Length: 521
Image (cartoon, rainbow, N blue to C red):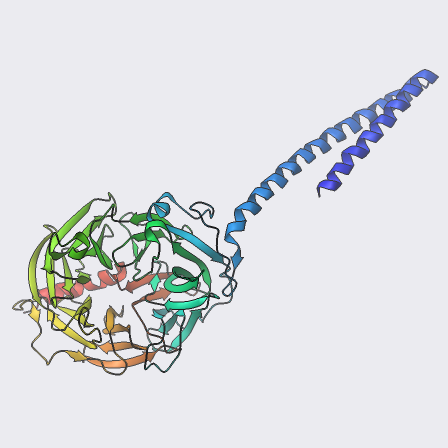
């Protein structure tokens, strides 16, 4: 392009020289005035054309310089797809993705991918789906999956409608301990570990929910080196902003903006919250408070008891609530729809605590009814809690669920339910079960249970307390956490429930059911 532009001014300049010579010769030889005037007009036109050509040349030089800068900017984030991963060069700022908070916390862009492609399934036929991870197959599994992956189940028919696993072209040493979902259902989040330069390197995978193709991979550096994603929840904060958490045990953690290239808007480190424990995080119904369980061992046993941190997402202020078990391991949490109370498990003490959120004090304690409770879920009218008996801190092969009366119904006591023989045994591949998530339709009344050492999602009928379905993973990998997403025909969507608890629609559906239960005699 530039060579063509250079030729035009050169030719114009030659034409001007010829015209000047012609005018000089004409003046000397007595050429008529009208011919001289015509020659002068032609000379002026050529001068204007020459000035215009120089302007175009200057503009093109600027465009060339700009394109050069863009090419340099694109180089660190070459767009590739699975199996052709091109890592970005080392350093905190070459990617254009980093923010001040991502650099403070130590999370950086590792690679980008082209996530475009055909739809993974027919969303018109399957508007309500459940998404869960598919990790590495455990001993006894019928499959041999060794990569991070996920699978998608029609929440009504329980049909597996799509799945994907992600081979990054490296040796994989660990995979798939969670699936997170953005509030609009556009992005899924998973974790994997690969060997790079002979070193095991955990990565966070961000996946296009429509195509199930990778969009980018993130990597921990500095204080977050070795950041292995464990849990992820999606929520809308008190300001109406879409947010997603990425957390690991003992921190640090990150909050992303899924509508801004999944950039980090807040890092949560030991500078912000002391004693970060197991990264079971939840969000209050109003989107203002992030709850993160604390471990006393992270603080040199100075407190000698478990606790929870309430992080004010508007101000960054942190409130600590202690007394959740001596030498404890607080884990699963559940919030009432009105935001007044929070329930939390003590996995090592096999107990459940009730916290008054207005006073930040413990107002109740009872036995969990199972060993090593992990996840914790309130039923629709909030008269009962389901404790997921994983055996955390014990045998770690739990496959049972306990039921606790919350004591909110008139005449009820905060204790394990005594109306049937507990616990509920799940059977089949259930082993080291961890999260229980309510199906978003109260008439369906199901609890979908993830299965960290098994290869099925287990669906429990809460009316009969019997298993309704075992939904195997396509490749025999294990499951961990999950969530329900409702999509429109154009693929706009809404996350309605995940391991962090219900979202606005589910909370709204709970309100009249809770009121009816409280009014019952």
